[in-house]
Image 1 (cartoon, rainbow, N blue to C red):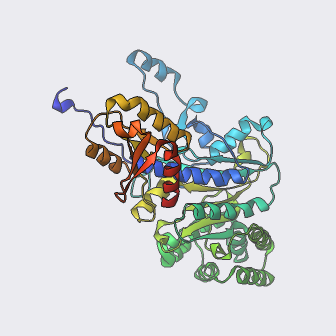
Image 2: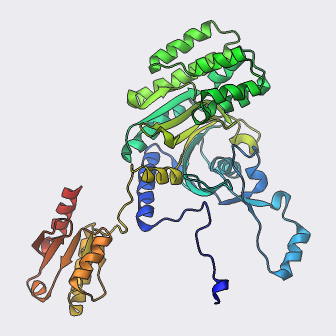
Image 3: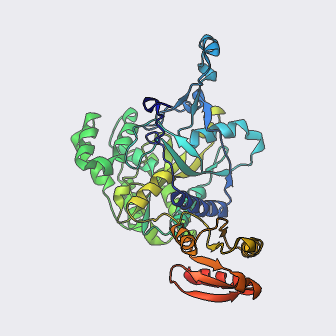
Length: 465
């Protein structure tokens, strides 16, 4: 192939590609997240990467998501056929940009096969055609859970979400975090009490949601552009800045409700929030892991009640590391019935990328192998294979060195892959049914009988943990 015809094989912008140590870290995180999800009874599902375009647009293009359409490339003799038929209407297809809209379609398709409340988890890749930049990708993995009911759904499901968040981030040990909880009805009720037009309330909530990104001064400007009066804007800013312990916040909200005109929606939000907080406490979530934050709004229109955002303390610039909330109409859109739900989402690809960059997480070794059985003599390969299998049966991950090369080079290869222990067996060791076990981290080398080799390795691995 001529140089001018060289294929550009670089990774497309915004589409991540992991080295082995990075992928192993992702798998480790997924395993921890899956374990917590399943401990609460959530069941896995998988929806197609491709959905009908009208399905993805059923509730509008939420947030700043940009849908990737699917347009098959056909040979010239079929291109005219495609143009004549037209890929439009119900035949147009696109890549899913989140897990929630596909969940709604999934429930509609399998309504009679599911038990409600239906609790599912999904840890799939999604696609968004937005501008790629640091920490934001066009392809990324989301780890979602949702519970969906028919006509009603207990607020205790809302209370479970912070418990699940707390267990996940404690398990992966990334430092101190804070789950900030609010209720959209409180914000809606407060805006109503100020006399703000109903048609402007959602846009005002969206502006409030950007407080940490754009700052208080910009929020004031944006509210005034919406036609909100300066005195109303000031009251909004004062309200979302109310701080205190969880009990202080609940007391302040109840007191405020007593003096507030048209407080029905506000009161309902406070009552729901108190119920959720009581459930969170009953589930044993430590008090230092959650708070009430009236500035948490979640900008997506479909949230109607409880909302959550989780912040890594000391690294607030990372933004929310897990968010979600309650919605009433999103899932039932295809069925025409009320199907309330509550869920949370971890944008794992973005989170992992930022945690590595911040030095909070480190990539794992390139291989899961803990031991290498080195190759000293080709004629001993049957013994090397048997020893390797015996170690694997004991639950130890093993690489057997099949290539004949110098012992030093085999040690170097093991060390580069993060393998700590090498098993060395020459003719004399084979005759005596013994081996030498070398610790590449400390340089120590000990003689171990083959009968006791697995137990010795397991003890040393346990000590390293």
